[in-house]
Structure formats: C-alpha cells, structure tokens
Image (cartoon, rainbow, N blue to C red; front, side):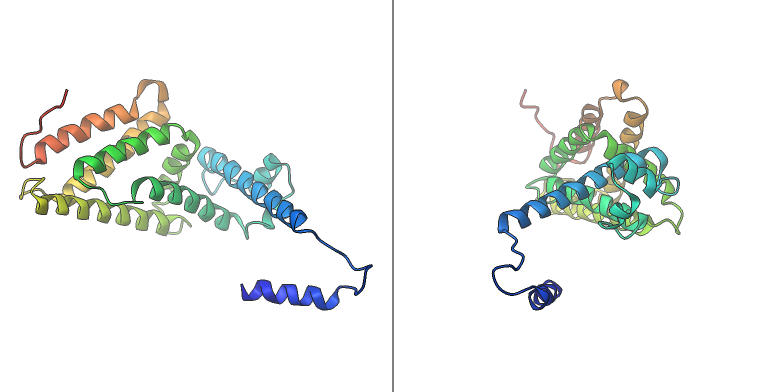
Length: 232
C-alpha cells in the first residue's frame, strides 16, 4: 500500500495543472486492471499445459508467451521468471485444493473421506492440473528443483492434517483405539496419487472417484470402532 501511495504522489506532482491535464476515469482504470488480470490468468492456464507436457526444465517462457499471443517481455511484466511462474501456478492450484478440502474441519472421518472423493471427481475435470502435478512431483525428487520445497511441505501439511483428523476420530470413539493414524494417512495419500497416475495414463479405463471411494470404504470398515451399517 505504501508503494502504491508513493507512485500516486509522483504522478500528481508531474501531471500538468489546469483543464488541459490528463484525466483517467475510474471505469477506464478498472478496465485496465481487468485486462491485466485476464492476461495473467491466461499465462497461468497456458503454463499448466506446458509444465504438464514438458515439465519445468524443458518448458520455455518464449513458447508459453507465444501460445498466449504475447511477447516474452510481456510475460515477464507479470512474472519475474520461469521459477516465479511455476510457483504461482502451484499456489493457484493449492488455493483451489485448500478451499475444497480444508476450508472447514470435517465433522467425522467418514465426512472427510467423502470430501476426498469429491476432490478426486473435481480433479477429473482438471486434467491439465493432474498431469502437471504428476510430472512435477517426479521432477521435484531432485532437491535442486524449484518445486522440491513446495511438494515436501505440501505432503507434510496434508499428512499432518489427515493424521490429526484420524486421531480426533479415535478420541471420539469413531475409530478403533489401536488405529495407526500415520500409517492410514500415508496409505490414503499413496492410493490417491497412484490412482491419479493410472488415470492420466488411461483416463477412459479408470474411474478415479469410484476406485478411491471403494478403497476408503474398505479402509473405514477396517478401522471403525463399531461395524458400519449400510443405509441402502
């Protein structure tokens, strides 16, 4: 905010006085911002497809810019470089997942598992994001990769959230007291990622939400404190 104020002050000091001075309507300013936001979003969407197909190292800012219909200099007006663009793409995807999965605490383990299945169904409608995620996770095993820290922290964060939720289920009496919550959390993440890989390779042969729902239903039966009754 302070920087914005400073820029405004300089503009006011250098602008000509009187009726001949330049005037900018609020509507015009809003339109300019809207165009800039739309262009930035187009760059992010295009980058998803490039990172999904070529990964980070083989992707080119020049090709991304060309597919957006702008120059590389125009792209760099919005992002400082390829690493900044990558991290911005990941942050946007993270925000979507957080809103879907972590916006409100689950009332039960069963409710959490249902939300996870909904997220898998949502991911089927975002194939570019899923392909990009799989590609970048593989690349980021290299500690020098710019997304290494992001994925390391992401897995730790999601695992921690899942373990806390499972432990709360044990305390409530929803799950068996001998439930290994960390093992269950890691297995759940592993199955989710494994199904995503299979789905990317052959989307028509894998019903990702259905397969995930089946696994989580079996898992919940195994760790539930009392036998579940199928309402059907």
